[in-house]
Length: 147
Image (cartoon, rainbow, N blue to C red; front, top):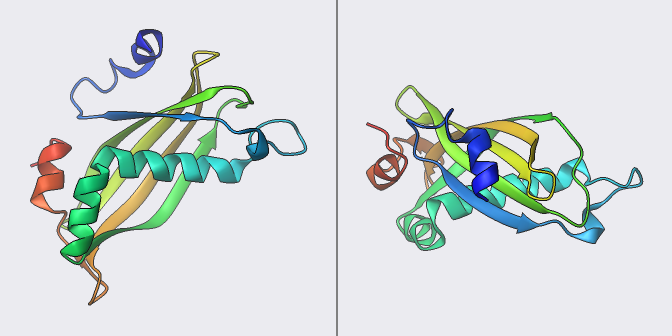
């Protein structure tokens, strides 16, 4: 993993970033014998949950707070194949106003040691009952190194 970290560590030196590894599954391949684009959304989603932390995520849900993605952009750089492991890097790229954040993520192939895909997700946190946006909880701002 140290070899992979060299690929992104410099660009993220001022960011709090989190990494997740997900084994690529055979059934995620499509007729072109590479991982289907839809699987990438699952990889990115799982990595965001792991970055927040399952216990913290559950705690926020109990408080009536939840995230919502309202925009997704994915650039597919190279193909990912089975067998391999997707190494996903997650960080908050920027805050937008009082209630929005841009979450940046990249997927690297552990086997090939190269960038496979990069994505940006525009997100809000919301009050689950009122369905209205709220400021990102301070515990998450602290975790991701935001003011």
